[in-house]
Amino acid sequence: MKLSPLLAQFLFLNKELNLNGIGRFRMESIPDQTDNAEKSTKNEPAASIHFQHDSSVKEDEKLVEYISEQTGKMKSLASSDLDSYLELARQFLNIGKPFLIEGVGTLTKNKSEKLDFIPGNFFNERMKENSPAEADQAATSEESFTDYEEMLSPQKT
Image: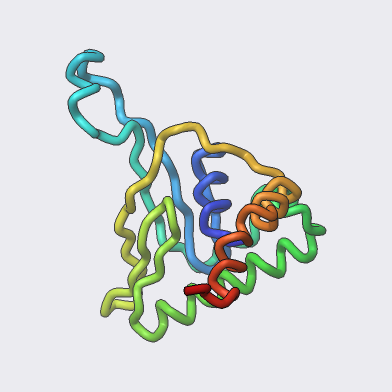
């Protein structure tokens, strides 16, 4: 399972996401200044995400616990997965490539070696929490293999 969606879900649920060695993301609500009729015609976000670069941030135990619960892995494996993901992010940033965290935004390193954050398209609708067992069942249903088998079987003319 990818970690990006889990990081986005954690941010939306807790309004704060601390990534060790990278920094802090905070979600702030935008005050509602329009009535419901105007709001339905405009596609304005209900919240904004702010980033503070801080390489001294330590691993967030609540985040590791959340990843562990969502993936069904032990906390030590969830912590290792998170470390690997963040190491990949640091490597991308060090070679000058932008790093996308799906549902949150994109990080880039500027010439002064600081991280810049570009908020992405985040979704405000309620996120469906699937258990790992449900995800495995959906991916291996027999119906999903019917098209594949048809492709392998020889065509009769």
